Structures are given as structure tokens and as C-alpha cells.
Image (cartoon, rainbow over all chains, first blue to last red; front, top):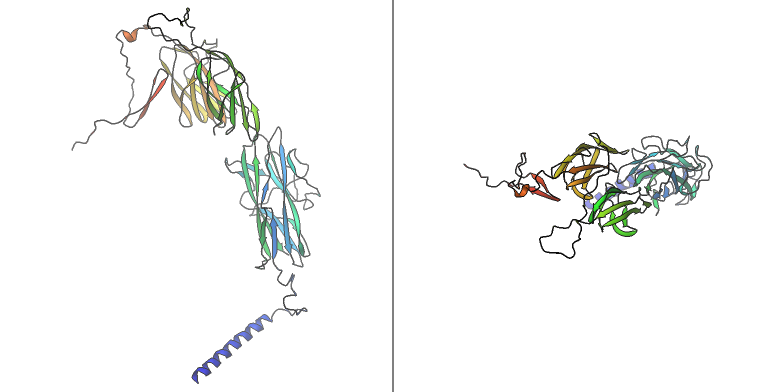
Length: 210
Length: 290
């Protein structure tokens, strides 16, 4: 008899706790769509506040210098998928404290382009940079791939350092589903003074739900 | 290969993705060059050491009179060394290098190889002996003004300065001590009449190497490799015969005493003729007495 009374008290305690959780949960505004597993909350539809980002992973911009300045342009495609009804913003920045490309063997560098996203400039000897057609001050383009060619007419910017303000390279105000792609062009120009080596740099893309 | 980053499951409103930019700068090889022997020099027929410059890791091909003779790989100091066998006569030695980034051809050089000396006959007739005495194998020294001390060879990256001996010097010694400096860390090599006789083991900015001399004319090529550059200086040293050629048979001792202090474990280098001996001293007979 004593055991029955105790059990009853525990059940009452559990009910009180569950009721409290229910009150807290009901603090969210009521939605018109009362179907389980659907509806919107703020800018996100049910279960879609997240975002996905896809990129090529590696970009090869190889140059075999000849007389004068030789340049190569390669691209990376960044895809962003989100169901956020307010869209997303895609930003780019260097990954570490230097935005130069660093030689893996000899430690030499290919300097970042002098231009910025707002005021990009043509590449010069032994510099590298990026551009996104139609964004910021880059101009419409279109940019096309080039291998061991002359200095391109298109303008480029050096990557902002991770400690600075990242450059915005894409932005939407509506959901991106299916994914929206952004083509990021990377250019490297070199002359015969540069030591043979593999020069490496790391770039970070950041996708944010607006 | 694609890098895919998801944050959907965690419902994060922001996501980072990273991409690596790689740029392989592939420079075509520099024009290779033979530093030693020097163009137009006379050498002794047989195995001849060739040294020169070529882009690091490039394949260096040497030809003799248009025929492939040797293929070696240039080292990290942009230098190479190869041995070719040359018969007596005039030869043209060509050089070319190849790398994944391209090919380059250097200037060919002309050499005159003379027959090696014939050992003196020990009696009896020899039908194969030429009736006339063998031609001297010594390099006739081209006329050249004696250069002032501190003879230099310079490129944009490296300067080689010879402190001693003076070009055109004469000596009765069987060897000469070549002393000099370089403007950057460099390995130095010395060739006498086309044969490499000494080299430094580690890059340094000063050097002192002994080089054996042949009787009469000696063309000494001092090559320095460093800072991605190989340069050389050529000296002409004349070794005069001793006043009494038969001294070694007339009571003059065969040994010589050289001043110096060495300790156990020290390595010394002794040059006898064209042979270089490395001798490491051991402490013999030492014991502790209580």
C-alpha cells in the first residue's frame, strides 16, 4: 500500500514537468500551417534553416613562364543551397595570416594582387588574385580560362586576410533551392625570375543565411 | 573532386568551406654550360671530368662529336659533374638539358686531347715506340697578361675572388695552395688541366685547397657553385723543374717536413702527384699513469 502511494507521487511530478516543458514550447508564435513537419519560423521553412556549400576543393593554376609575363586563369565553382526565404550571403577570405602563395619547397612567394574587390587591378608579374564576374568592381566579364597566356584584361583583387573584412562574392534575397552557383576565377602571373616550385594558398568561403 | 559542406542537420545559419589554390610554376631549364674544362683548352686523353651548371634536377646530356656520351642529373646546387672518355685529337663537346618544363641547349666547346705520356722504356727495343720523342702533354699556356691579385669572376648572384696564387705565377712546388672567397655560400672545386683534383665538402664563403701541378704549364679552373649560380676562374700556373732533376737520387730525402699542429682525430689531406690522401690521425701509445 505504501509503494502504491509513492508511485502515484512520482507520476504527479512527471506530469508537472511535462506540463512546464509544454508551456515553454508554446512560447513560439503560432503558425497558420498546423501540419506536423511543415511551416515557417522566421526566414526558414521547417527543417531548412541550415545551408550547404559545395566547392571544387582544389584549384590548379599552373604556369610555365616564358619571355615577359605569363598568366594562367582557372576557376572554382561554389554552390550554395538553402531554403531560407531571405537568401544567403557568400563571402571569401584568405585562410591564414598571409594572402601570398607560398612555395612548398623553396619557400618563395607569389604576392597577392594589389587590387581590391572594390578597385581591382590587372595582374602583374609574380602576383595572383581572384575575381567574380559582375560582383563589386570586377566588371561583367565574362572571364574565360587561360593557360600560359598574356596578362588578361580582366581585373583581379588580392584576397582579404582572415583578420580583415571578407569580400562578398554572392548574395540573394530569396531561397536558393536548387543551389545557386558562383564562379570564382583565380589568376596567377609569373615571369622567369620565379623559382620552380608548387606555390600554395588556402581560401575560405563563408555562406551565411540572411 | 568536390568538397561538400553541410550544416543542415545542425541547423546552423552559417557555414565555412575551404579550397586550396595550387600554382605549379614550372620554369624551363636555364641554358646549361660547361665550366670545366675551358673552351679551347688542351687536355690529356682518357677520362676527363666535366663540370658545369644546369637547372637543378634537369637531365644533362653531353655529346662528343655529336655522339651521346653521358647523361647525368644536375644537383640541387644547379651543378653537374660527368666523366667522358676522350681519345687523342680535336673534339667538340655539346651540352643540352631537359626537364618537365622544357629543354635548353648550351654552347658546345672545342677541346684538344693529347695522348698520355709514354712511360720511359726500360731497355730493349720496342717496335711500337715512335721514332720521334712523344709530344709534350702539357698545356701550352695561351698568352695572357698577369692578372692583379684578387682575380674575380662575378655573376648577378655570386662573386668568386681568388686571393692566391696569381694568374701566370711560376713555382717549383709540386702543388699550389688555392685560396679565395665567395660572396655567398658556395662549394668550390678545382680542376687542373681538366681533371678535378680538389673540392670543398660543405658550402662556405672562403676556401683553401691544394692542387697538384704538372710540370710546366697548368690550367687551373676554380669553380664555385652557390646561390643557384656556377662561376669559374681560370689560372695559369707554370711549374718549373727543380734545379737538380736527379735530386731524388742524390741524397735529397724523399720526405718533407711541413710545419703545423694537429691533434688526434684531425683529418689532414696529403697530395702526392695526382693522388689525394685523406689521413685521420689516431693517438697511439697514450695512456694514463696514476
